[in-house]
Image (tube, rainbow, N blue to C red; front, side, top):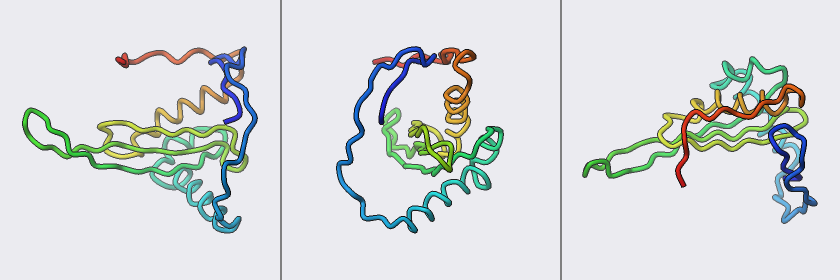
Length: 138
């Protein structure tokens, strides 16, 4: 992460030098295969209906984790949806990691992620703050 800006891009809240902590050892060929697979998830796969509306390609990977919860004294298996993505797919500028408790799959997180990309890539003069849908309690 290079910097963090306010919702309307008028201020930089955090600006820092990017440091490489370690090398992964992943070859450029293998990385290209992974990136193409992620692009296909967003353009032809399970997330295409959300991301095809955007004027650029997104790369994404969905996932689901199962969690056993005790609900009213009964052990119940619930799912958490996971979605990691970046855009534009060919020259990434922003990455989004979305974890949604109680979502059946990561695909279900794609509409909200699509809205994040729409907001981010909209013209600065058109930018409006996200409207709260619910409250998150600390």
